[in-house]
Image 1 (cartoon, rainbow over the protein chains, first blue to last red):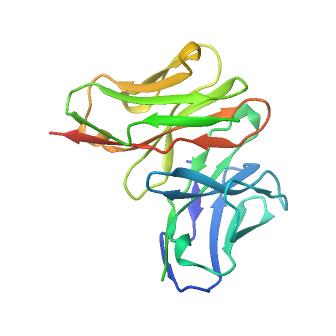
Image 2: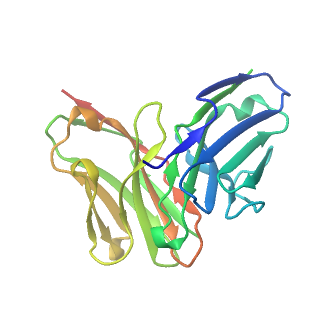
Length: 114
Length: 114
């Protein structure tokens, strides 16, 4: 069974803290994504990566950075957490074109910044 | 540029009634179209997808969707709602020119009344 796992289901941090969200996939997928999900806004792409050490900004990259040192792992970093980054964060992965870009999602991390 | 519009942020049906969730898209290239479902406190999972060929696609749990190019629509239907169908549903589009960014709609929450 294919799997995308995220390091935490729930996380509470304080304003100004550095926050790491980890995502691991076991499907040998080339592409990995970080989204945030907010009510009424759907999923918004923060960053994506199409290969190890490669990254591209999505639609809302401000305040975030990412790291992909290994193919299976994609980390999202909040350099200095702020209350407006309180959200649900979803990681996803997809294969090359042969799969028509179907994405496989992790269970999500609900982050609260106080 | 691609975009996705889901009509109705909330839809309520009675158990056994027809489910119809509406999705319209815009894409400058032939699209790949997806419906994902999200159950409470979980990530998204694929319900069905249109890539090429037959415009009526069948998915899991009795859902189906029809790609109508002339109407730029990809509405999701199920003949008879079940209580277990209560969830949030997301329509998504990916342009099939070799890119792999997917645009998601804002989501429609389906309520099923006994």
